[in-house]
Length: 380
Image (cartoon, rainbow, N blue to C red; front, side, top):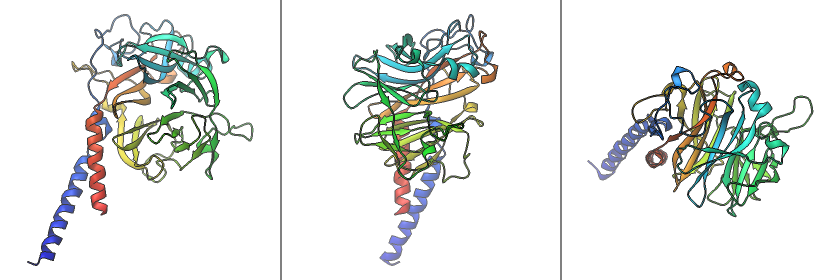
């Protein structure tokens, strides 16, 4: 056998092995890297709200009003301060509202703090009480270039940014996020007002301080946007919806994108709410060539498992956000509700909370790198 033929055979075998490896690796998706939750206290059934599917549960996990005497909680993004405390920036509304009314009529931005990332988080009050009585929804937080803390609200507001030198505030209004369509449809960034010929509120805003020093934003559409001029922008729209080139995926009724950078990749996970299924995409530069990586998680998977095997089966799992430390995701936060949103009435025994779930980010990033390397070898 000639040397050329031997080399050809080796290449064929290598490619076959690579393709096989890629197929095996792709059988695992983000959902496979969630870890059981270690209870921060005794699992409780008596004297707390919720249907049997969410009982018993750890009421010290995340942020909740366990007796549902006062508040329902939603959203939630965790930022660690220099003293080692964990600060959750979220939204809440009074239990006197139904869920259907509360999120847009009574929602306010709040700050909560814990010594442990898993909780319990103690509600410290409104983030910006001096502005529209604390009005806010889709609330998130992050650290800026200069070390200041930034909190953002959208959905029921235009897309405002508040800043403070202290993680506990006071937070002062810095301004509204600006967008440069950059040749794309303006609707990728903001809702179009149905009664006026203008574009107004942003929705589901997530902002990432990139390793290259620029700010990156994704909203409900999942279209990536980039700012070279600070956290307020203007953010240039850099592409269409990340799922647009995947017609097999639902092309509407998508929401709640979360954005993060780990393992050399930019990640977006968004939720298709009718199917209660979230999808995962990656990109090398965060701006182009977004590639579908499979189902991130769904309701049926029951990711809310405790170390003793107890499982809580929440009716809706929304508003995911990733917490990254030392370059890897260590935890995800979710907004969860025990019944259908229309079934959560005012002053009843149903409600919502923010739950924290550990995640094996090291193994996940190693898994993703294996897939990326295999794909590059196949292309070569």
